[in-house]
Length: 269
Image 1 (cartoon, rainbow, N blue to C red):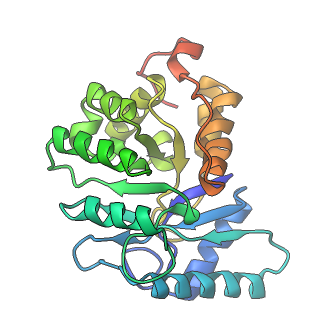
Image 2 (cartoon, rainbow, N blue to C red; image 1 turned 180 degrees about the vertical axis):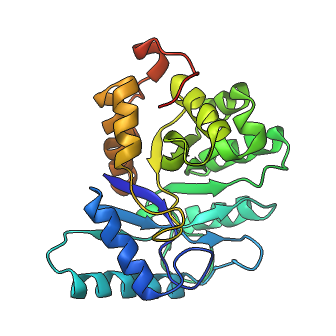
């Protein structure tokens, strides 16, 4: 499995506080069956601007080096990325990056694993029409936008038609493992199951923030999806689609969970 969304760079947002904790998070993810994590610090979000790409690359290299020293037996990759908060200037910066594509140099947003995939965090207060315009313009500029945890964005979680519109425009959706398993509460789980039933979830990621608080790991969510919708979908969301991101390839045609399983949105995973 490949985890596309985790806050493992130490000391720069509300994720890992120290290098030691970052390494422990990586080891926990590896023990749970992951072969790679994409480090996705918050960008452009209040005091967590984190625009210095060289500094982010330095921290990522430090985590990878410390992990290799402490656990040389692990074949585990720590890849570059960011969870990019949406604001009014994002499109201009994304268009400039798409034109010159220097994801490891200067200041600015960081795509996932050096690809054309961008992990976007909407604040929840933006009009759905503005989100649709942004997704459309990013796709035109050559990006493949991924919506981080739509089950936690009020206007997305409560309106499947709005999410369907964004997906039709070229967006993809990443749901959180703990939402699948119910550890974020019944409401988040129900909204996540609806997204899965509608075929509107393309990735499962941990959104890990620490070893104990929001820990790494995808296996429990993967098992829950396999039990409800089948092994094919579980592999697609946790392995195949994330691998396409890391390899900078388009996704293959998504399997629609509800259409194959016959399950409705109610009930626990």
